[in-house]
Length: 281
Image 1: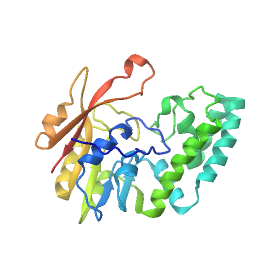
Image 2 (image 1 turned 120 degrees about the vertical axis):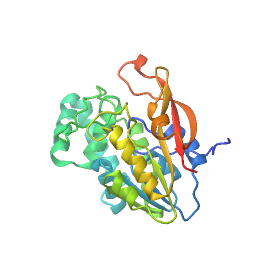
Image 3 (image 1 turned 60 degrees about the vertical axis):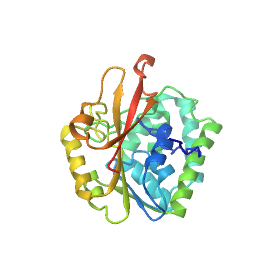
Image 4 (image 1 turned 30 degrees about the vertical axis):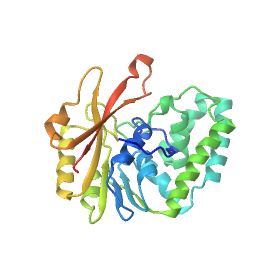
């Protein structure tokens, strides 16, 4: 298979399991035309949709904070210049106060839910993680990099925001905070559903917890929709294989590609994984 060699654009948020490195494979595997509506029930950072979705798209997730950021970007309440000014100001305070300022912003965010605070925390926390406790409080510790927001780094983030803003401005993209069942049930007509649920047996935190019951429910929803879909999941790593591919998804077509994740506190925990794309076409 020959993959599309176009540039892959990165969204402004870092996230565990981001699919930017396999976007070319996903893009080469979807079945859409210019009038197809892209539906993404597990938006995450929207790395895939940013690169693959066409003029019509519905992005949804149960994490309200990234949805809020993108909706404010869509409305004009957040702009690339606003992001630059905010990160410059907060970055200066981080350089002066280190962890004291990080934890001040974290507490402020947990009280006020400012999407700019969320972006700052995402870019200065430990290992770029997004994690919440059972009280919906963001609880990732400080990344111990007080000089994180150098001018070049801020410009990189601002350019990512700017590209996303341009995509929103030139297309009919909708961002919704809702469960995947509601998003898939709304799929009608010429649609294509891309699902990137939390990987069963691998992601366990408040917004991303996932179990067998939810995996079964997702399959049921996709079958009832009768839409074309592509599902991302994990196939195997050096230690084990994903048993749910044979238990639940064995009748679907499977495309695989090895992918390396750089998430983990220690280098020996950062291992390659074989990704699987499952399709019903």
